[in-house]
Amino acid sequence: MAKTNLQILSGEVLDEGTEITLAQLCHTCSVQAETIEVMVEHGILEPVGTRSHHWCFPANSIKRMRIALRLQRDLDVNLAGAALALELLERIDQLHAQLRVIDAR
Amino acid sequence: MEYKDYYQIMGVSRDATQDEIKRAYRKLARKYHPDVSKELDAEERFKEVGEANEVLKDPEKRAAYDQLGANWKAGQDFRPPPDWDAGFEFRGGGYTHAGAEDHSAFFEDLFGRGYAEPAGGTRRTFHMRGEDHHAKVLIDLEDSYTGATRTITLRVPELTDDGHVTLRNRNINLRIPKGIKPGQQIRLTEQGAPGMGNAKPGDLYLEVEFRKHPYYRVDGSDVYLDLPIAPWEAALGATVKVPTLSGVIDLKVPANSNQGRKLRLKGRGLPGKEPGEMYIVMQITLPPADSDAAKALYKQMEDQLAFNPRAKLGVS
Image (cartoon, each protein chain N blue to C red):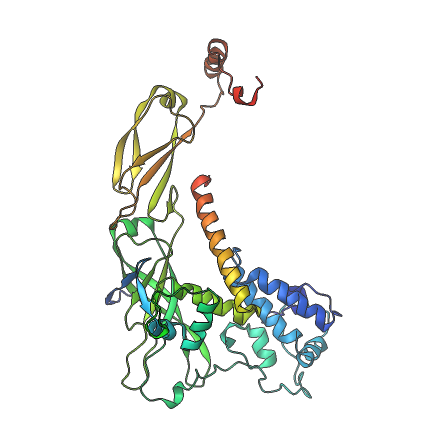
């Protein structure tokens, strides 16, 4: 295979402590601010800060938001259902992680 | 081209009612939704079920599909008969949903190709930031521990000149940040979709997952290793060689260690502001009693040790 010289890309790690702005979240999930407000009302997203125009969100909101949007689109669940599904999915992930530690043989 | 049995995919009979089809679809969609399902082929199955539903939920497409006859077997080589769809209104491509790149050649030959919907209003704006792209990448634990540069292949949907959506392989050379944990994201500025006009491209978000390691397990930034030890090493104590992410070390196994005992190596997990720990979990491994000598040794233990492993259960 021909060896191509690709530029090396360095990125920024979004960890638990990273926050993104409302505008960034809107852009990255291709939604309007109103959609995000509704997600906040249902507890799918939890903003940091009080006034909606200055909201910031923990970086894992991107993942939660995208899953909620897909569940809504593909399975016709409403937002309350998506919120419940997200919570259960996170519980399952935690349990799987524990299970991997206890018993991987 | 392979024939697809949409009824088989949906698990319904050929004379199922529209309501039965709807119910079957909902059930399967929940089961195989890639965000929900843990099955390995969930995404493929989900697309397959979506395609079957696209045909069977629409009475007209279903009637046209039924007309092909019931004698075809799934996977059988198939060519649509000439003019097979004459008289049906979907003729000439009646497919409307986005995500059309997901459909099989079988579907496209019958019902036409989908067209990507122009994203809301972007066509009219001349300067607009490109879309952000999202992808998952699999990396090795060792690469997170030391930091590394790796070439990663992403599949990027792309609009062709005639409006079709195709998937293109894109290679990127990614610097894997030292200490990145599973589930974390890396944001690569301006590596998403190109912008319109003079506007900047969107960003690329990569969600990191780790490949399964043959012997280490990762929980957050902690790393676990099962260490097999012999019964006498556990009982008498020993110094044994143990692989860690920073190389082989000599580990002191304390005397009278029991099965499952955890030893912590401080700060030898994934590096970071608060480095993770490494845990060594003792797995006592019995030598097989496959020779007279081995059997004699076990017998000697039985005779000479007053040991009841079931004392806590109140039985002997």
